Length: 610
Image (cartoon, rainbow, N blue to C red):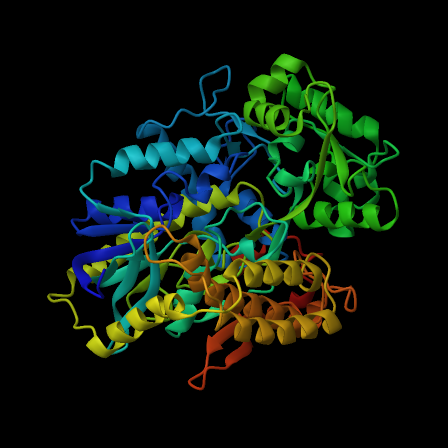
């Protein structure tokens, strides 16, 4: 096979085929744009399908007291007031319409006895707010969007990996990709590009993400000068499977706790009662009796009037509590905690949580209607990503848009469960709409510098010319183990400095890896090409974590355990690539929140605003 490059032309190129990418493609196609969708894996295998619990939207079907204002408040509070209030407002206001739209397109949500979309409880949400389809909500969302999108005329390029985004005269002009199957090379000319590539959690050894989550979307934006924000904030979901080792990290939906699942240590104690932070004290039960009364009301279908059980605290709090129980010698048999839903009627468990029932039955030989699950924290989601305009989703690079997990702003220091799915459809729509609008204003495609195409072609093929170097899988494995140990759920300055030093060494090792083989069906070659992105996003995380000398949300420093409202209360990290190739970090603030929105927040928590 030679170095021939196939050329394509599309008004809007969308990189990523999860919920955000599909919603953007539908919107851009509806506006008349010629759309290309490029996805690293097979269509339908996006990480959106792994989102089991539901999509958060203030439909107020289960509790009429719910409203977008309360959803806004919960999102800001859950994010420890570090999120972009403008995105939080847009998300809370528009999420209900996006859910109703999915229903019009054929999504089959679970129903209340009155025929309304059912909603369940989730950590950090004041009222039952998650529209769901059992515990397979993400799968139904993808099915619905794909079925809608396939009739829109977009071109889909499956199993292609994008290696570089091109700029011409400062604006996006296209991208380069290769076909993972046959190694063929492709240039996509584009008037605008939407990044919808998801997250970075494969940079950690224990994670809920599969092989695609290597952070290449984050790196593509960073490499062409886009500003990156809040990369220190990586969410460790409190409940991943931890036994057997072959399934370590696979997600156990928060819906188990939303349906009344109890977290217990090895002594059988419901330890979450000991870990309720002061800022949440008025919202959560003080006693087991109070918690169980609340759960019984939920199970019986009545409105919940009592305070919620502390198992439904935000993910950062629950993950750290499990970690603390382990450190105190009270861990479950394999180093985590027990999650018990077996007290509920077996048929109800199978009906409400069919995926979890089959997952544990088949992968761990555990019947969750009779036995406890064993769970522990797993790297799950990055709140950080490409900085975007809240109203258009355009990045700081003209013509480049971003939506979903690859973008930052909505979730602040910690994401609430269920906000990810509604994030995808709210901001995917906005990104697709604005990308199409900008493309219509451009009469011609910009020319891409041939020298830059030649350069990325050479870079892409270069690993295949090497011999005698390390297996790229070994370098990736060492990177993931190092990040788990030195930039994981609990951090300190010395370990983060070591991590940055280790990443420099790993970068040198990556330059000489030898995948062997040719361009056809060669996973070693793909992995050799991914290492650069994994190293750069790991550097962003470690650098931002080192500089943020406080604990807030998903970022915990045991050498700076307190939340420092005076200095860090309104400061978000911003990382950019310097002309000399170095990584620069600064700090910036979002515009001041207006009085009418500030009045919705808890004044006691807004200490930095006093």
